[in-house]
Image 1 (spheres, rainbow, N blue to C red):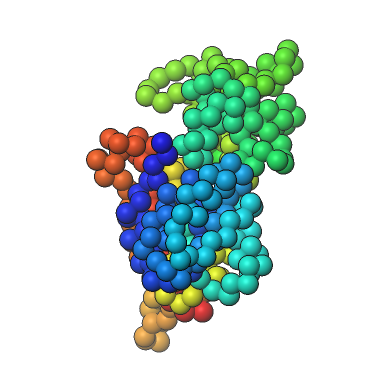
Image 2 (image 1 turned 30 degrees about the vertical axis):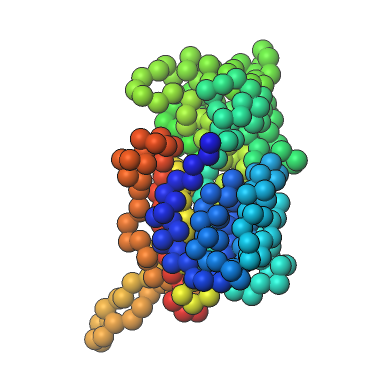
Length: 308
């Protein structure tokens, strides 16, 4: 059963208002959305966005049981959050949630191709109705392009060796399954430590297939513009790369006071201004990690919009 990570901490940080308007840009199986609506109560409105049609179907069944709320579910990308919300006729919102990365159900379904723990087609698309698969990228990118992809999205120190091994292997036979790719990486770099050597490679291809960094950057920018003064945005990340992106974006809009040579000080930062609700990332408790190991790498950051 899917367990939403940092559930209480996340919804607490949003300071949910009775009858408020909320956007869940990564709806998944609606674990966080259910709690938001439970707190917001009668008259609340939620727009849930997800690229995974199966997730939307399952979430609809769960959320439609909540009485007295307005619910809109949209098949789309959170990078288009501003357009989606405005197309729904909503001017400004009280809160936005982004729970990034791949969901537990997606990891558990071998045919989605996200995990090397079970063999399946090398797909990795969150939206299976469009776009290149990981197998397509593995088959068509040059060695330089593959190495760059592995360094950028996987922060893989052996990027060049793995890229070269992929190119050599695909000259013999197309790499089409998760087991083939995981085995190739393991043979190339060896195995040491607790983590499988293909972990960073799978992260890199997943992020490339789904344009996760681009979607995140657009969602942060578009989402912040939707918030009312006093509205909040909470983001849960699972990789250092996405956490740094969120941290830097929030810090830029939180700004800082700079002393002036002539005396006094002025605020320096990117508009619109925000306040850091969480000055440091919130992480899962030992108890939650014991119940849900995926929570180990989760980090929550939240901001509040203060003015234009």
